[in-house]
Length: 355
Image (cartoon, rainbow, N blue to C red; front, side, top):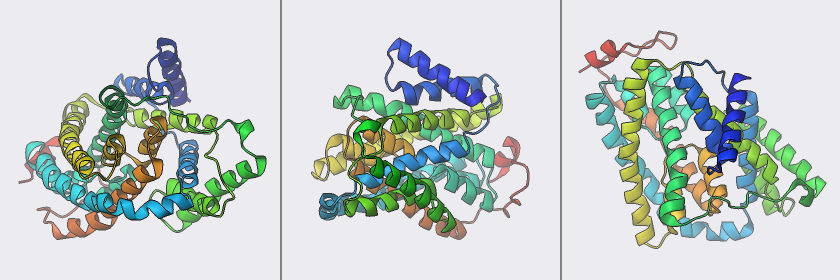
């Protein structure tokens, strides 16, 4: 409850001050402040996962026959995504290993721009410092979600008040019921199949099938997408619960510095896509901003970007990292056997002791 109370206070504060994205950034910064102040907050949990299914339905509803006809136009820009990941890895791994002093598994999975949960699971299996890994990826998402809206607004002139969807009253009841079935059913099926990002991918695929069949013609109600913003903001901020001064100095600072590196790489690839005429500026930027699937879907909706185009590129990124990272990890020599998954996190001294 403390997490949601802090989030609600943050959202209210942003609304009263007229600040942008109050339902996303308000909860995010409020929960972040509580966490940095030493307050303990629980994870968003099941309700946060359910909220992400709404984003899966929103993406799936955007997959129409017209989009299918456009897929060949996305091939060239999507083909740049694996190269993008390779460049990040080649720069990020030495950065975390040599400059930050992290051990091999921690450095490798900190550098991989994959999904938060997937990288933590893979890192744990490899014997990484899970707390450091979690804070670095939480910082990556935090910085991207915070900076991108202002960058898009100030430098690209896009409004942050894009239409999120129709009101509940405007959507036929049978269609709303189909959305609920697609959200919950798609999530549970994907979960049973152990698919990555099941809460988004499952509903997206289920809804896309219904959209292509002409049974769903709307996105989820605007109110539902607003609720998803709130819980995503709470979820990102709450990851800093109980952060220590050492973690703030070492792990969070390393995450911030890595975000500067990511910004340069992302801007280079986005500019390349723009110069090649493969996508408009904002779509290119959002497609090569290595944030979470849910967070990028929300931002694409808020700024009125081409949602299917953006999500397609992030799916390619996540799939590439999930399939490729474990293979490369087995090939690398960490210089020590991995810790058992239930072992305590390595201390800073242990991490820096590795050559």
